[in-house]
Length: 309
Ligand code: HSE
Image 1 (cartoon, rainbow, N blue to C red):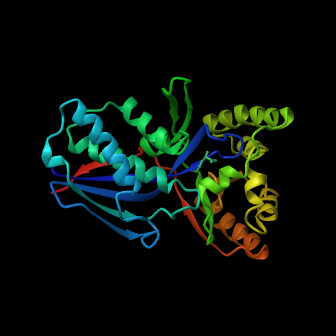
Image 2: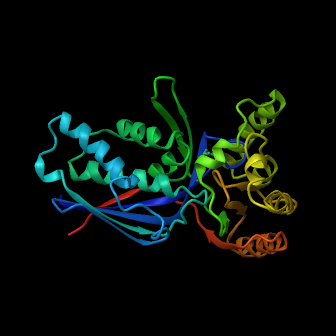
């Protein structure tokens, strides 16, 4: 194989109480094309085209190189692989809490591994993705699709379980036009949390997982709440705390998506999705937050690899 395309879904991590430990995949995609035996170049089209680095610091490049270096040590790679070109066709809004960096890492890793004839196994690829990201909750649903609960063992091994999302549900994502870097949104978090806040999250997370498992929409609405990260992060965007609060009063599942600033609401079906999108957009407008909105389905299959002629 000389040229490969990897289509990677957007993801929404945390979903309220599941900080750093769960996420879902959504039907919005970035496409990462890698071609070997070409002079180094990185071309970017679509979302983030003006902001994303086109140098060797680009994370698709970096993650692909990591796979290449391991493959070389195992004798899987010759000089024809040393130089490659990348093109990115992005639909996932960048730096908004929808897993755009995970999509880049997963695309780089899977793309290079396929070009080299799959020298690394899935556990090794996941290990690289999690090392890059620092947490598994976006990378794993980007790999596998659906809802993925995950953890990292103390020796770095990643362990996960995937569950398909309820078929009818739709995801309303309200994407503020401001960016929020994950680094900044992690720096604002406290180093220790009160025991009662930890218990608040633990009790809701176990019920939330049962809600997804059984398709119990009301249970998901009741439990998709958090005390470990959301209110610290919401304070970074004027009006956000009130917008989240008012959206929750609609008695639907609402959460900050990943590190924000996107907010995700879950609707029972397509029709409810249109209503909810209108209601959430009104709330955000009232709070002075300029935002875009999309209604999307959950993704089932995760990243897809395709040989390109
Ligand atoms: N779990 C991570 C965080 C997701 O909340 O920082 C980053 O998108």
